Image 1: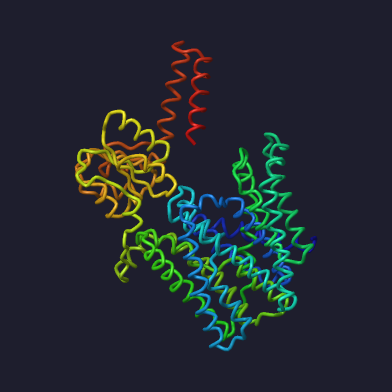
Image 2: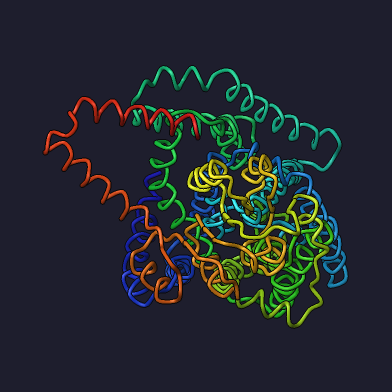
Length: 549
């Protein structure tokens, strides 16, 4: 472990120096880390780099597992499984065949194909954080597809790590993997609640419990001779269930996440070497498939299943990079001396490139989506919109509520109390399911034209957006409707811009909360209400909020 201290010091000092400049000019961290790796490559032995890369990937896979809640995927599980299977079968088979054509043996063609077929749950999660956090359907699709691919990748890692490729040798590794995953399930179902209760209300103990589980599963993986990444993946699954202090665990892991993310991306950069002509050819083929073909396969697969073109496109932009599991497969093969140097060089080079390009595609996702619509015949059947929506076509003088979270739900209740007809729009499958209690509801993207046509926006009395999304707000202001418009923003400067652009009122929760707090303080100071009464009211409202959630 001592021999890792100098490389780690170099990694973080170099990353800090480069980030100081990058932050000032607005460059994302991932490309900076990769450049730091390129600079440090001559000074860090390859063996050390490979070891650090595996540890970096292992911890990041663990944090991904902690964030994953399989129950969130239920609404899109079948569609996601179809897309994941199509990518693995179609893309994997195609690239495997191309590998054989360019002279690779069958085993190296498998390594080559795995890099093309599997996408990075770590990079995809980070890039799609906004959509995932808001539970939009594209966020759920991205997470669910990644999860399905990761499960397949676990099987592939176990299979390819066999000492000998015989039925017994492969079965032994798969058996060890199954045992570790079963232990994770048992911990999750029977043991984890006990560990949480023993921790009491201590956030520190919760974090230590999570880290202890990680180290325990990694030790179990080492003991059975399988990749530590499998152990880390199992550890994450062991604690994915909801519990009162989970937010504390996730917050505590954020610092670790940043620490190991720097290690991971810097080591990827330091593994890049000057490629041979053959490695460049392989890298070119791999890049073309991942950046162009794989997104197109994803888009058309989702369109076929009835999703909207924007949803399909935004989902595809979260899947256009090399998976960290594919990197583990390649690193493992290099250590076992099974992978050809040209194939390893190509996979590492394309991994670095696609992790940079995927940042760009996500950042410019809206212009890219519009360009794709102009170039390609992207037409949706709208079957998801039609089958999950119900609106009276003769509806007039109604209120359109965008978003069925807490604010949207309360607004709907008030409208119902006043016998005011409403249409509820939400793009989160779970929240939309709750919205089906109303006669008029739409499962749709509030940015696309079809949703507003279905909502009879031209005849609406009021449009109330409860989601703090600038794209949705801009789209509403672009509607040629006579309805009054109330929007929501998390920033005062943006709220001012929306008012200037034509909004009648903009809700800023922090601003409203501050006003209400000052009113409460003034009420207490003027003795209109006692502090005890205020406390009782506060407790009652908090209980109502807890029950609502």
